[in-house]
Amino acid sequence: MDSLDALVAQVQGFSGTDDLLHLFSLLKQSDELLHNHAPRLQYALSSLDPAKHSLGYLYLLEVQSSGTLSQEQSENFLALASTFLNVCIAEQICLAPEKFNMVCRRVKEQALQLQEPLRAILPLQAAIRKLQPSSEFLTAMHADFLQMCLLAKCYKASLSVLEDDIFEIDQKRTGLVPRDFLLYCYYGGMIHIGLKQFGKALEFFQHAITAPATVLNAITIAAYKKFVLVSLIQLGQVPLFPKYTPPVVQRNLKSCVQDYVDLATSYVTRNIADVKGYITTHEDAFKSDNNLGLARQVIASLYKRNIQRLTQTYLTLSLQDIADNVQLDGPKEAELHILQMIQDGEIFARINQKDGMVSFQEDPEQYNTSAMTMRLNLEIHNIVRLAKKLTSVDEQVSCDQVYLSKIGRDRPRYETEDFDIVPQKMYTNL
Image (cartoon, rainbow, N blue to C red):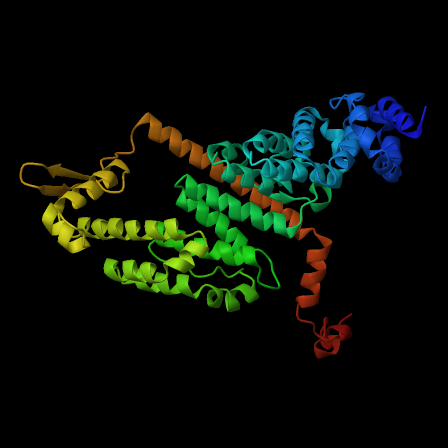
């Protein structure tokens, strides 16, 4: 029996729970051996069951996938890795998170090389669940998973992961680095844009912008460009930076995205011709950032916002008057905009086709249906759950030694001779 066969036998024999740490130690010492026998690893893998020998299988699969792979090798690796990620034992792979992350990253890379990002979605989703202690933990695979969903245009497939509330980042267990967090926020925001969930997209981009930083980076700049455009679409203006935004971001970010800042300034005037002209003039800049489609949605949002302003002033108005006020080409285009806004629930109105008049109405929702009651109960439940989580986090921070030492350093210090803890007069009475 040669050295590789002996290692495979040890993996088969020591994969029980009690022997895992011993097996882990053997595998860490066998890295050179595995690389020396790389051509034979395919046969060695066939001798192992990924559902029983997950830790050993992980080490062999990581070495077998290293280097440049041919198309046939890529196909073979994706097949092996997909099965492994779906059936592997979480307790075993968590001993080697770096190796696990490398295999997951190669799944992404090989799927990209084959131009089939769809093939990586389910394996990476399974990998996330294997490495997470709970759904509240962010892993290094989150960003890669979201990237594959974006490239495959399977936005809804990402929601099973994207809708989890993230509260924990365990860098040691999950192998996460700051870049992974920024990309998770960036890709998450882009997916919500694809789903037309602009409010959620803003949350994700804001997380990327306000993440702790000492220097600006390309991901933060790209996130802020989209943040500006989505803010105009969703809010009609760009919010100020939150107080907890890193100083380097507050000082320097806007100067890196001047075209977008100027567009926001033009948007506030509500002059559609000016906004259109600005986007046309700077079309190349928006196109190079892959934001031209989003910039055009900014124009559409301004039409809607101007129509909504009319509902606050008039009870009835003709389609021609709406077209003139909003700078549309004619009553037919005004009718199309209004019908779409009615369908989306953005305004409440009725169009009289006979005389071309539009009657603006109040929101018909009475908030007394069973569906609304269920929705309110769900929102209350979510708020209570979040309040409990915040209380728990506050308690953890209050007991954290690093936090307490920092508070102690920052707290003003006083010399004891500046004042008497016990007034001198009291000594005479003792």
